[in-house]
Image (tube, rainbow, N blue to C red; front, top):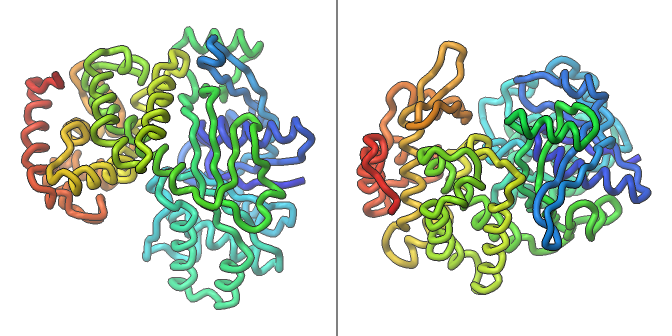
Length: 459
């Protein structure tokens, strides 16, 4: 068996990576996925109730017609809570059948914290957890692994490798271990692309899917038929990751930068820029936004003027991809909730929209209008954050109350009355001082005031 360690039990990996491994098994492969709960929040009771089996439903347009394809996922062998059963988790490091590590800990997950300690597991970063896991494998005398993070940051595997090396130095681990990590493990940059809306929110869709599947499934997840996984070709990875169409399209490539840049900026960047605007306009899903003439124009203009020109020199190819993205946004089945996309919006804006913002500013010598508007709505949203008695953070928008989920320091900052402009100056948040872009701070200040007072209009 080829065993896969998967950090993250969320909808995306279950509807993307696990669909791929399940498809390979149906083609004669022998893959087993071991899911690790990476944070000490939530529980795994639904997995236990369903014996780690679940369904995905891929809904959308295919060959000119509407499709709703159901797939049962059986490849998950075990779902482990390391905060309860650490020994079972760490025993996988000593398993010679383990070959692949996949992770999705959000854009904020791959980072280094000099305060992380070698002892313990809770409260440290994913790269710190991984470093200790690899050290256990090294001490067991086993070969290394293929590490395939899917977090949407540039050069995700390179950044993960950099963090692991820093933890080795921080904790004064043996030089031989560092050499083993460098020579025996393959950190493969990846690009993933499939829109996943996850578990249905409304009762009608739940009932429809239950009827479609033929049984109740509390882990069912909805995605689109389109799927692409571009993986950096290193070592003998082709022994374990097969190219071609296997539920998703898989590409092994020596140059992943274009795939990454195109997808992150065009698809994810559009999502992140749209979400706070759509929320203030009372929209619930991406589909709702695309059906609104004003919001559609906002998305289209941002793509045409501020995103597409800075992806590559081949404007025609990027435009073609952008058109396919807009078609996917128009998928009526996805029910892609704006509140779901809003998770960790601060780090998402930095990774997905700030690069386009900077490229536009460098070329034109002024701030991009549509990306500035999206950022302004984002700041207006966070400016209204309130902490509730149960520890959640909510925002009262003109049409409804929503819960915001982001890094605790950001939420606490705004819940305590933090200033937007000072937040924009924080280089730890953005990697730079955003107020250095001429006119940006003043425009955001003006926009936020107008948005909060109900006096701002896109058109």
